[in-house]
Each structure stands twice: as structure tokens, then as C-alpha cells.
Image (cartoon, rainbow, N blue to C red; front, side, top):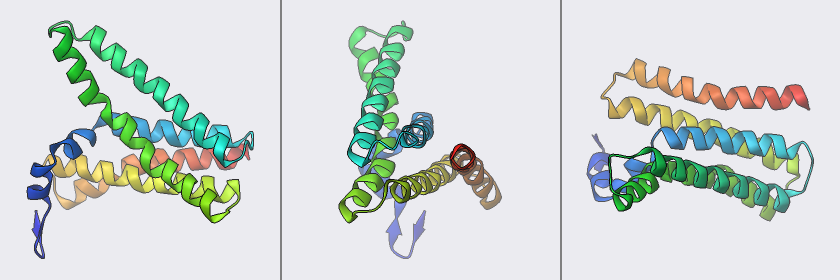
Length: 168
């Protein structure tokens, strides 16, 4: 897709790890991260503790995911299974970046934990929308399908925000 001198496809061919990281695990990881931030924030632990708990829990889920992929992939050698598991599950780790970066930025700016969590959750919604749009784009879907897929994935983040509002 080339628009105004920017060729996205050419750029992604130079960085294939970006495309590999934008997968089902990235969607799952973003929903997981947003859910953890929402749940942990109920205890009002302060931003540093919220960040540490979220990152630590996602790392445990990532490790379990990698291990399950390795054990479950019996058709490959151990080395190949490990490489495949690490590549497939990278999206879980990439999913931490946007929501946690928002928490870190809010902490740096001196925002309240509630404002930081709101920023992080809305950023997760945008991330999910982009992941949905990307999935439809990879299938060369039309504009309506891209928008519907983006709305569907963003809806998961919106559901988390609604649940947080109900609990608070």
C-alpha cells in the first residue's frame, strides 16, 4: 500500500518481525494487559506497583504460552519448536508496550492512578482497533471489512472499560 510516498508493505518487508508480532497473541496480550491493569487498579496500589504487577503477570503468561507451544509442537525438533514458540508468542510481549508506556508517561507527568488507567485502557482500545484493521488488511479485505474487524477487536477493549466502570 503506497500512499503519498510512504510504502508500508516495503517497510514491513524490511522488518518482518513487526508483521509476525501483529498476530492473535498480540490481540490476546493487549486484552490481557488491559484486563490486568483494570483489575489491579481496583486495589489502588500506586502506579509503580501497578506497572510491576502487570508486567510480571504478563511475563508469567508469556512463559506459560511459550512452554505450551514447545510441548505441544511435537512435529518439530526441540530447537525448531523453541524458535517457533518464541516467534509466535512475541505478540504477547509487544502487547505490553502501549498500555504500560501510557502508565509510565502518566506517572512521569504526575497524573492520578485513575487518569493513568483510563489513558492506558483507551490506548489499548486503539491498539486493538489497529490490530483488527491490520488482520483484515493482511487478508486484502475491503474497507467495510477492515472497519468491522477493527470495531470488533476494539469492542473487546471497550468491554473492559465498561466492566471497570461497573465495578468502580
